Length: 331
Image 1: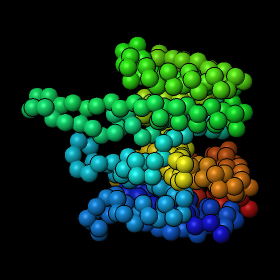
Image 2: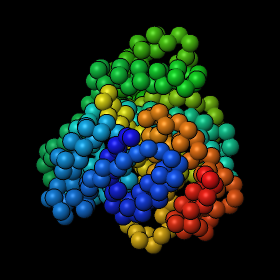
Image 3: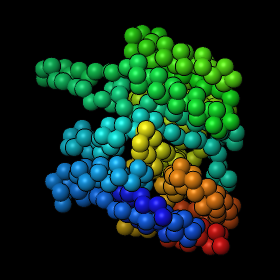
Image 4: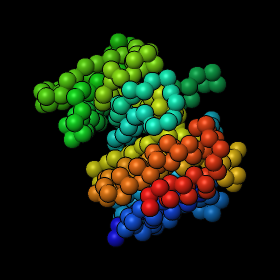
């Protein structure tokens, strides 16, 4: 039996967590959940959005499944997501992006992976207020982190039968910081002669993605660009409601839905659990429960093919109805 830390999150988080836990149980996966709280509930009960026992639990269990946690905009506590990545050194964010059956999008040939450096860049949070009219935010790029994420991207390409790694930067403007990132990816690329390597500027990349996304395979990016581009690519296949995500470190991994906590539909049984479910599928693969992962993914796609979808992706099913249909299609 495998013990996994579960963070049910805020807003719709508890609803979609309940759905995913139920589906995983029905798949036959031998998992025990160790629940912890973070975010708004933790602030109310513990006085902090990220209690130490959450970090301790993930370090002990090595794997966590996390529903969306609210991050206040412009004020309040710092993003729990960012704090978790930093505390656990979850340096690689993986965002597979592939068309899903029956979800209508502008393109039907999208199959790419965004690999985002997860620990530095502007997300290091090094900011200062100079005066009432000026604020500084420091962009941090290091050789160690850049080489590490580049190696991760190439290793991912090799292990998953991918043919190309494309480095995405703005090195024509950020010549020192993004220039260092490119220097590091070029160095690592030399160790993988069987994987094609190319480079593109992030603005051109965004334009190319919305014109011809099939040209991309594996993309490796510094933190900020990776955050933006991964949401763009999610839009190519149906939006954040169907986007899977993993944050991987040397010792721990967190699998999460990357969409918001949607407090406006909290408790209304309208939430779509697909993103968290697909992230859980990646989690099951990570812990070598591949049969359960395949079983869930096939049942999900069969449910879509039957026309059973939540409202955000063109259907009318409630969260409960959608969950029950997936479970039925696994049996």
